[in-house]
Image 1 (cartoon, rainbow, N blue to C red):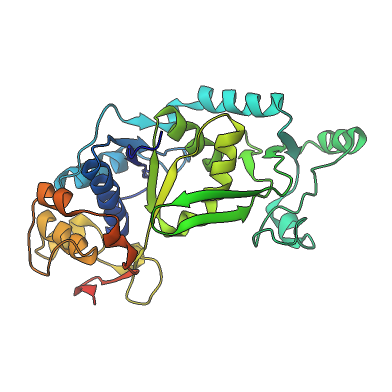
Image 2: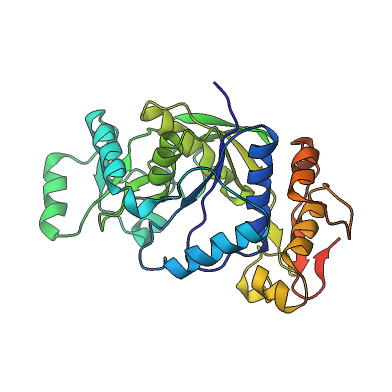
Length: 309
């Protein structure tokens, strides 16, 4: 049954910037306006870059904006057993195979195995190696990643704003050569386990939705629906980043803007209030409709002047 339990799942590798915060606000408003749960998940698969102090600062910033959550916070670093079980299930279904290709070798490969596969798709080099070829790779000592065996299937996922997202699914990695689990696997396993009904995130991730929907179905789960939000851009038109200057809540506070002012500017960019208005979180929940997002375009943000309209 379709539902709108949602989540926000940042990586604790630094402070949240205004683009992250706007996506979190949309995810929270969508869940709360439909009576759904709003869940927090810390995506700390990258153990080298993840820091507890970043997690703490991210949670403080969300709370300052009035974004609360339900239940305990889930951390991917605690979920290795669940990811390993999912890989075993895929192996039992014959849906994974070892791959010894480096990124450079993949880039140099001549084209993808399917004419309508997306740019950068895995070309299938290791998909049909015989036992002798696999043994030769193993003797060289290079650790193998595990890829899904999607065989060029076309998969669709539904987005509440963009409509049908359809793409050929390439043989993407679910376990890296170093033994770590890939994002595409972890996010699918966790969304199913947390019973997330709708994934709200930046529209730069829209192309991964068909992959993740395919993997969910392969693991026996109903895929969530999606709602992809236009990005916040820097003044140069590129995706907002730390290089752009005052892009975090702390940066804005140093310029004299409190969290309510920042929230109001983000809400105004979504058509939920006028410039200078300071609606409460409850007022924003009452006003929120998905239709507000249909005309939303990427927001340019100047680190000094704020939103550029």
